[in-house]
Image (cartoon, rainbow, N blue to C red; front, side):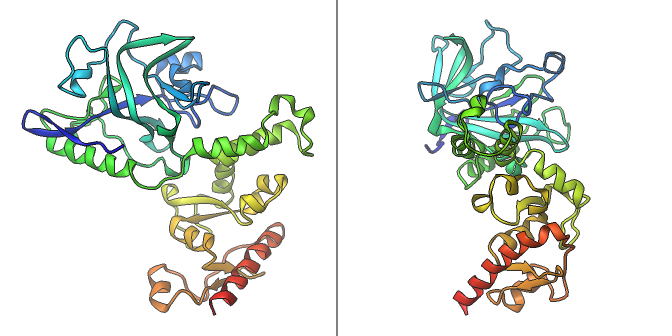
Length: 357
């Protein structure tokens, strides 16, 4: 669904609502490897957040969202989302609900959204579900952790003046700074409608492989229950695996040395889909590269020989090489355990070179 403008006085704005949550990877039950954080004193003291299931798909194929900071009888002012709402309306439909949270070491960022959502004036309580918004599962999008980098402004920052403030919701406009707020809304809508990797899509695919973790004894895979849980966790959110590679490479791109962790990606050398379960967990099957060099490596436009010397595709001309900052004498460190994975990558690289020669 597109999010068309409607008028609020002389200002044009979108049917949109921003909500601040505690931070989780999956928002699909609190588990040993996914606990809420950065949600305030209640969350920290109780290790619990009511928004824990915001991206859980229920039996009716809907997701039910919650935002804290409101008593059960306290209302959301839905007339601020759409001025045509009357005081007697108990809900509004067709809303883009954008969820943000404070990601550890990154700050407050957008983590996902509901498209075409229904937003209720008062908290709903149905079949043990407490919620303030809902949408069909096809309209619920939770970003992969690697893509959670779109900043959410703070109204408490005097240099900005709009965004999430004391309350955990923002209606998307600012009386004093509405030109800036309008531009931000437009940027968000463009961001929402662009291509992304989503955890909820991956999670379903990976979980099908290990549908019965609790009854692991019936699973023929020769790997421990803990390892299976770790595989699911790592594939879905790259949780743990990325941290291990950041430590191994000291927060630097293995090729160029860039040390801004916002611009570093943890990838498998032998791709996930072709790796067995143990290879998927092996840190030696991983490499840490900046986003640019990771893209070149992923597309087999570069690879590395047994000594770690770079191999550059003939599909890259001299200008491409200059712009991507790769040179014939570039190299990376390769330990013995990494060799077989890189050999696999290198064979694909050679095959593709032959096809394009």
